[in-house]
Image (cartoon, rainbow, N blue to C red; front, side, top):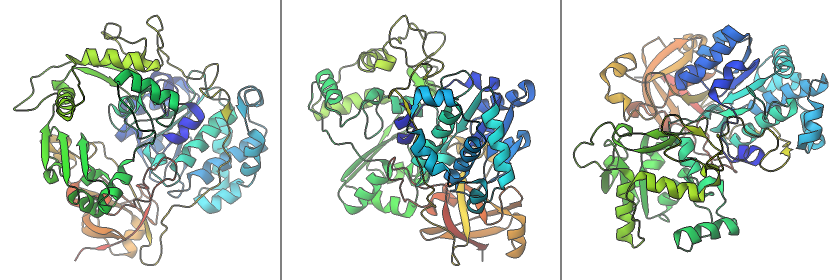
Length: 539
């Protein structure tokens, strides 16, 4: 994420999963880890149950981890900056900040402090709905712990203020000196198994492999020399920007690999129009997804069990993947398909194996330079690993940050792009459930999982349901400015009054028909987690 990269270098977990259980305080925000990252959730629960850690959960929904929390901060969706700024206001006011760390390893503290002074607990209570007392309690727990860890996921990033949210969490880590030590850090959890690896390999519009910037002349020259081509200096487009340009007719062709934007992207009616407006849509996937059904060309790829290579997981660990099954039908390895297309387009790609490709990766990517198939035969290695004798890096920023000093970012609270009104009086937030995965491309083909989670539900607070005469299990219609969907109501106290929640896995009740495609101005991530909706019984 661009916001974290500015402060910490890469947007990766600064620490390792196994370290979580050793933390004395843990802040989990924007992450329903028990359902989305169960292995990480086990480490969090272990820290609480076995090691006496105090857990702070900041989440509008009553997620499973709330039952293990010392403090539950139930903020209004989209008010994260105000909440965490108030926590830092208390830490400074009560002289709990780490002055030695701030003096030696950070810059811009005084400017940051001026902004934070505005966000008293009482001020934040009016914005967030969290009581001032609970804010003070959370601040004291986090600041006085010997080792405090911050864990977050897409509930923090998928906002028009996503970069601000991440920078605010980075500020909190800097303020308390919880960086560069075991069981501390700022730890984003990746949404899918090789998202970290894809980012590392340059699957971001502004970076080459290893987070070397496209706009940086020396970096560009390095890859021009390695690949024997002339490369453009201008960064590319993000996913939503691509859809916008396709809708305008400026983008003529799109090649989609392992992604199903016709379920996962915001404002799906717009996405469908954009995809249909393309002159050429190519989809490379293992199943005929909703997006693939619109494609002019479908290229059948192979699953994880049918391929050889590496994945890089959420803790920066580069791991071997070994072929266990032969692919069915005409399915082929992704790398072979890409090579064949490249060769036919006139750029020669003559690789013989994934290992040969990996050797090129290590030759161009400093953080991977010391990793080889031989070294990760039995156990993965965490980057950065700069040479063959290096053991890998479990904990980042022990002595210094990538940029030298950690930079305090003065951040002002900005409301979400779309707020409730008379026509659309509820806030919709979206997420995942334990038994389905992403757009359901794989999991919804499992009879067992579909028995456990067969369809979308709309979580609504019991008081709201009573007021609207909505009965648990009854069909309801949810509308936003972008469309409408029908799903079954799930009435409980899991969401607060004025908020509804829909998981985004189900194409027939696609939550992302409703969601807002307004973008964070820096990271260009859409505001999937907050939009205004109405809800009523379906006729």
